[in-house]
Image 1 (tube, rainbow, N blue to C red):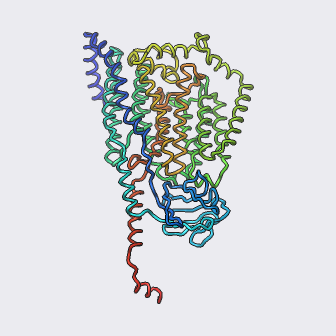
Image 2 (image 1 turned 180 degrees about the vertical axis):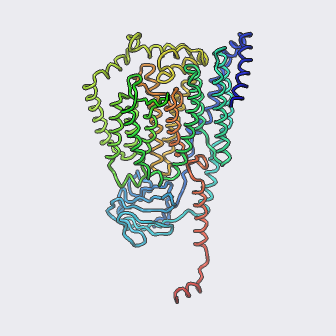
Image 3 (image 1 turned 30 degrees about the vertical axis):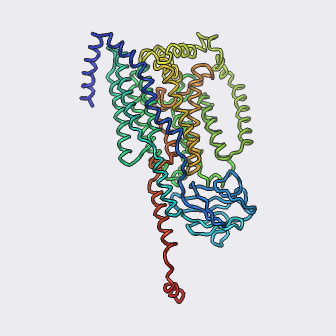
Length: 606
């Protein structure tokens, strides 16, 4: 490490000496790459965004229900509600079947269980009445309201046809985007060195070289395990590159810390994604995650220090971090639930209590930006868990009433938003940050002034709460809008993938994570340009801050677990579908095997 650092320092000395002797070369380089960077950004993101917006919708099939008329309905989820309603997974239009009659669920042990959902006609498996739940095996007969159904695997022909179709829909290779991103990182590093001149730190090339190596190591290791589909990671690595550039411009001393945050975030992304493979394991620690969210916020309230008016930082040994960022991951983990959990407890009382405690703690910490993020995330999770607009309307009304009570007892809160919409009228006081941000953003134009050439970094919180202004100023409006579009794409991916989601846990967690990232981005972007109050939240993946960077990567794991394309997610066991094919083959062979009359006669004698 020391030798590499000395070698890079020698190269930088030669480069800075050359630029000092030939200043025109540096100016020409800075002018050239300003036009090149938007083109590279489009090349990097085009494949990823296009693939996520056009994700194939061929569902996985885990079995089928044979109807009395000989037709069959495939089971395309691990959790399937059966009934007469148009909103169920398996719709059976028989008068004796209730609107939501039963639920057929696959466990992590690959065993199936049927649950009666309080139906009028009842549920029977192989002649036995199901009071609550009962195990179901392939070949069993299920009576729903007197309607006989046979639970069968797919035929071999259907299984092979589906496998071939899914193979044809595998994601395209993403390595060209990684190559363009590597060039983007190298040119950015050189641009920052040119802009800094003699004051350039050796940490600039070390950080960017480290990010490039980590990115390719991640790609190669997962590619060797036959994984494909790196669109989500491409977006995250691109935004993380912008984060290093912003940090190098505004706080060069924090560059190593930000690189380590990206590395730790990637590790968290991998660990959480692998943990999400096992839904039974996930269910066991949901309460632990709920306690973790409350505990992190509670510790911050007791031991935290105030910064920018909010008590949301903890300092240990000269290092400071925001526990509320990690609490976001715990909150979504605890709020998401499998279908079995949902229909057993239709009400969401416990989740409302968890939310109330978290938001209450954030209110006591005066961290109202994060409180708003938690509340919007709650609305998404609550709707996906219950689908009850009336309940959510009452909750929103209660939230408005609670906000009014807080303002009454803490009137100084309103002073923070006094300049909202009137920033230019208070340009030297409460609107100081927003007016400078808008001026800097306008001065950047479409292609920016170049990394390291801006002046907004001299304003407090420029690289965190006002980072969108820094992007516009140094990188230009085009790249700033591409960064915003990247975050929005993550949410679109979650919504489009709902139809083929395996479990409600993955669906709820991914939609909640995507909504959180989008809402947080909106607060950051619109707050910095005075379209919304400046609430002090970060731009996911881009803002300078270790806790925020780790949180962003952790939330990405929920989105990755939602990806059901073949071999596209390390969060899904590849052997599951192979076992289904083997089971279908065994089942077909058993059905086609000639009947042995002599053996049957011997069995009857015994």
